[in-house]
Length: 142
Image 1 (cartoon, helix red, strand yellow):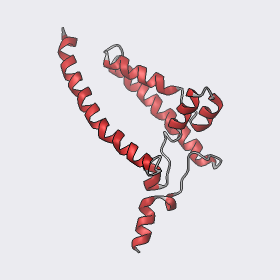
Image 2 (cartoon, helix red, strand yellow):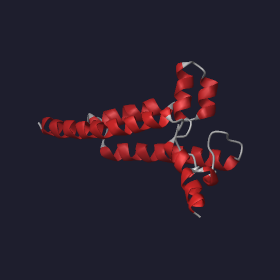
Image 3 (cartoon, one colour):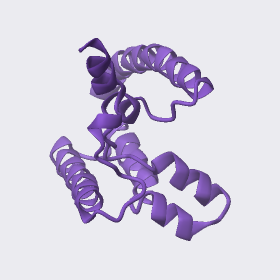
Image 4 (cartoon, one colour):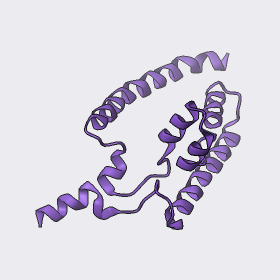
């Protein structure tokens, strides 16, 4: 009985999330048209922990798993993360277990990110704030 009460609320939350994702997706499409593949990297000059994930999945769709691994070694975790989120939504995973799994995923992504960032041999993850639009704009103002 308690589950039936939750569904309309969750449906409303999902509709709200989809309404928010629409403009974000449109924003990304517009940026792509101008050659900006990642707004975070474009603005700051610093890659994010998910950098390379889109290219990794495009490689998976071409069955090029070596390239996928090169672009982002955690590409395989996305279906698992989505499944865990879906099972949590359906009430099949207790919130405590869900929170632990979420923390494990965040630690994995942060660890891979820092390793790639500080290894110095990654052509995917970069730390070049001088190339970011924000610093270039501030330099222009000086």
